[in-house]
Image 1 (cartoon, rainbow, N blue to C red):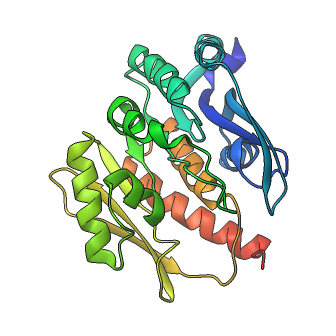
Image 2: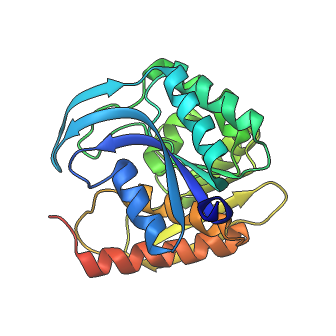
Image 3: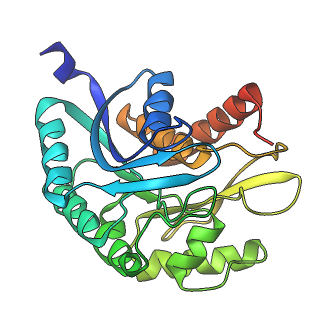
Length: 255
């Protein structure tokens, strides 16, 4: 019974055998913030830090059953969603979210691996936009993911990214959108929080050299952990951006 009273983040996503991303990175990040996790695995992958060699998707009913069991067993205060892989899994996850509208969900829309391998069926983009995204408190696309979701070419500057973000915010009925600036140019990395009826809020940090896998997982997981402990969205994003920056600086980039 003691475990039930502690706030948990339900992590829904794929495994990464290298430990660099996916649910391994999610659990690590949420644990840093002192929050417990429970799991619903969507996909098992075979991958190194350089490439994904195999992808095995679980049955949608099994994903939904894992989610429901985790929700029954624990005091789930936030849900973090990562790799979903197929249209059927997206629909199954959306069904469970509809059953639990009081729990905030943070979606990291995983479309491809760092090495470029697709991790979501192309035909599932529309289902993601119209069935799942409207149920989430926040979606956290990078510039490449934002362009795909908005049905446009990748934005060349901040104005273009804001236009795509506003378009997606309205078209998908999003509560909030965090546009990640990791793929932009310049010496600063700026993420932008968009919400209907609010001015954009920018979260800025120095851009560190090199690359590191799993930063998107880290950011979305940290935001979910902060929401689980009662932080307001803006505060959670700000603290999570700082956490990712400090961890990246401490661990160091992969060249």
